[in-house]
Length: 85
Image 1 (cartoon, rainbow, N blue to C red):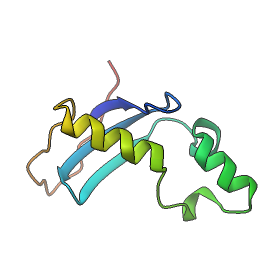
Image 2: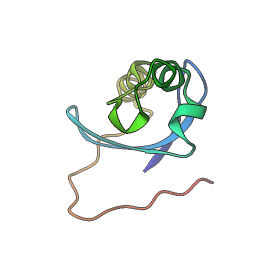
Image 3: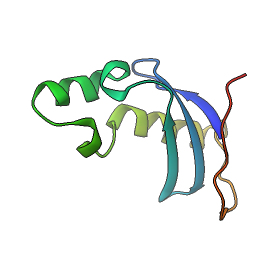
């Protein structure tokens, strides 16, 4: 997994991209406290377990992929732990 920061709020996550439609994201902090979009939606009564994604983070992942910062990995059949450096 690769570390990536949201270009909107700076929240850091770990990301692994297998294909344009299969991306794994591991949050490094509580989503409702780390992400303004999750916080706003939680304040409206949604719980982070039911919020499918943050649009700003999704856009950051797409941008990083286009720029070659985030590589698309071959599919794996086992979990890959991520570490911060």
